[in-house]
Length: 326
Image 1 (cartoon, helix red, strand yellow):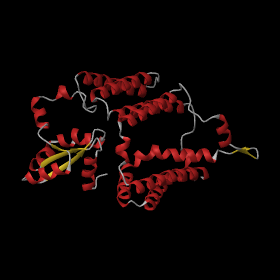
Image 2 (cartoon, rainbow, N blue to C red):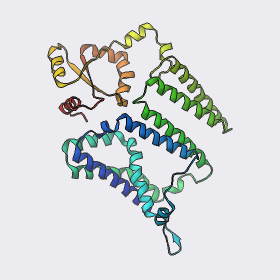
Image 3 (cartoon, rainbow, N blue to C red):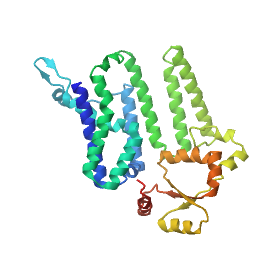
Image 4 (cartoon, one colour):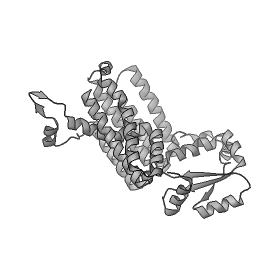
């Protein structure tokens, strides 16, 4: 329980620092992190981590530092309080996406208040709540967890494949969509081939399904598809459905002046859609929501405007500031 507490406490410190930074700067750090160079660098890091999990090399601290972390006192090896604390601190980067909605809401509020103390306290309390399940495990529920064994080696390699998927997901925001589909196809085919090593019937079945999806992705990429969730879209949709999907016409605006001009000329209510190439939710809206027949029907009675804030320019920031968009 003590070491789980240290882990959770270190994770809370990491979130506290993030809250203080958000309170001080009150700016959209996400936009800065969506720079193509940053995304490519992050992708390469995940590729390196994946190869490490495949066993090609090991990432470890220098032996001198490891010796200091894993101290031995009175003949009993301590589990390394400092090592546990470092793990907890770094895990804040990993578990952050798991709580994206409340975390985003908290950061929006903190950024608007500009209060560093409030930001630190808010995310500190939030991270303590996230750590409660770990404390429960440390208090005794851990005896119900699976025991270490050879199965962990397989899990490690599977997580390596997942990390390659994360690398492609990051690159998907800045590379050609068709190229991204090729990458997904190669990953699926590679995963299917790897799973063939396991002779269990369930593994064989999963491998076959993944292989089929990989082949479908290849076909979709060759056809010029841009949506990995609909790789055969060009074969399935006929001309009529394509026209129907394109019924929603958004007028692009670049600054507040163009926005006000469009509003003054509109005889209908106006909807302004903020969009960016690196925005995953924006792509979901484009590919799912704005192609839904019911949505298309409802939005016929609105003037549709779209602001592309990919570059995060001064005009983009002015637009976002006017509507409180972070």
